[in-house]
Amino acid sequence: MSLRYTESCDIVVVGAGHAGCEAALAAARLGLDTLLFTISIDSIALMPCNPNIGGTSKGHLVREIDALGGEMGKNIDKTFIQSKMLNQSKGPAVHSLRAQADKAEYSRSMRRVLENTDHLSILQAEVTEILTEDGEVRGVRTYSGAVYQAKAVILCTGTYLKARCIYGDVSNDTGPNGLQAANYLTDSLKSLGIEMYRFKTGTPARIDKRSIDFSKMEEQFGDEPVVPFSFATDSEEVQIKQVSCWLTYTNERTHEIIRKNLDRSPLYSGIIEGTGPRYCPSIEDKVVKFSERNRHQVFIEPEGLYTNEMYVGGMSSSLPEDVQHEMYASVAGLEQVRIVRNAYAIEYDCIDSRQLYPTLEFQKVRGLFSGGQFNGSSGYEEAAAQGLVAGINAARKILGREPLVLDRSQAYIGVLIDDLVTKENREPYRMMTSRAEYRLLLRQDNADLRLTKIGYEIGLISRERYENLLRKEEQIKKEIGRVEHVNLGTRKEVQELLKKYGSTPLTSGTTLAELIRRPELNYECLATLDPQRPVLLPGVAEQVNISIKYDGYLKRQMKQVEQFQKLECKKIPETLDYDQVPSLRTEARQNLKKYRPMSIGQASRIAGVSPADVSVLLIYLEQKRGRKS
Image (cartoon, rainbow, N blue to C red; front, side, top):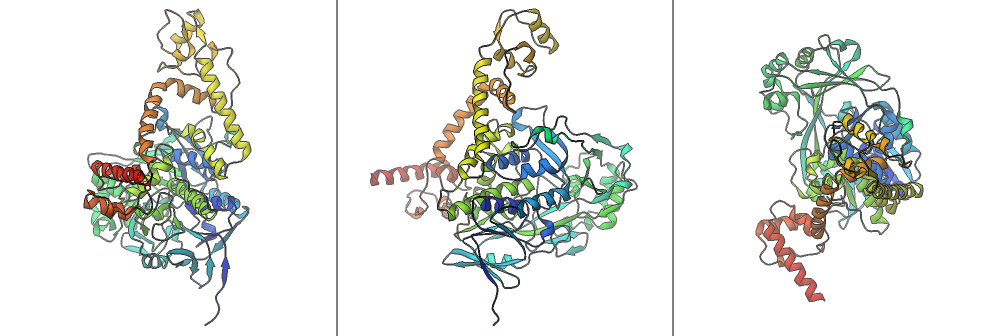
């Protein structure tokens, strides 16, 4: 038998999508020799679906990735073409940044970062087998038979495992955008006892800009000034000339075309077997499930500065090609539409993520980690967040350090991973603000205050950035204290400003802080009444305003967090024999044995574990500790 090529490294990352990029960068930046595999180097950080980063709750994740030392926020700041802060009419807990990307430049920019990172190499090859010994990872084997030995492996395969793209009766065994699927790795994972799911997602058509009648659509502008995603980005650098997006709507004719062709939709004919995302449905699903609506929003978004391709947001579909042409042409402004790329659904293999520890390491295979859509999630941002955590924890395991596990009170990333490893997800998981119990504390504006110290301790945040954070914290504290003691009388200047903003005039003196607490007023609009106001670092004024205005709500949520953390701090020994815990119900015992929670708090969120079971566990652990002492 001929000899096969063999090479060694510390960490292998399989897949160079958004999860793989963050995983590889984190591991390499922590000093581990890292090898990043991709089926196509030209598809690094590819955006196979929507051409944007961020959005409701997803913007929170990007800010948190940045605060921990990840790359996504910096990369979109360099490559966006339009930026908006969503939900500004609502409270700060749900404000979320969303930026349209130049897709090609986003990919090129991320590739440049990867290629110029020490300890990181990129290799175009298909990984077909995970190599193990005695339940521990030893490396990977590629399609050519080459072996790459490694101390840890991170799987970030996205939607490529046994991928199948479908529209109408057309079915191609390819990954997104016609790229090669990975057809062999699934069998290797199954041989290791890893349970697999079959999920589905989809994407709308791309159309030729020259065939669009924009006069029939509503123009959508970006914000001025632009707020950067990364806390390290100079805000002056992102004040660019922005590109418009456009809003139009489906209509009854569109819906009738869809309804009369449902029997030709692979979604309804049984051709598609995978489960699709409930919160990002195809246009066929919208028409069927929301039959009372006579129209749905359609966003026409540019794919980049140097292409005429436009993304038809809101009209994902797997209908046949002829139906797609008729359907899109029924929309106002698209009467003469020319399709560049057909819409399609894509099926792929992924895992039941409850097989993972909160560190994103597999319970059955030591040293094997995973992140992204392979874990049953959806979205670039969810993928990048998991990739970052997997990369950090793979590196820390090799270095003999404690893993990073963020809990639900610390970060949206904590909510995301906790949901994935404790809850049954029979469809692609999407992050939403409603999933976060402590969302008033987990705002996108304070992600740096929550997480940058952790990023610094890990080793992904520079000393300079850490010291800037300390200065910002000190300024916030001092300014809140100062504003609480700035007294304002009933002079004419004060009363006129209150009248301007529709606020009740003063009958006696008050403090600046008391005025900030009024719903119609804020720290910024009261600046003219405060001549002693100091020059502040970026972001300080916003934190002062929120801290004062929502003081009571914040304190109430902090008390809730204290109660939550009491259970999170009660750790469960990894070796605990649940068969020895008396009075546990059978269902609870089975699920606890299967998913091996790390804390009482995590155990309480596993399906089939009741409050009574949690009490039994608490008593048993206390008795064990008492016997030891």
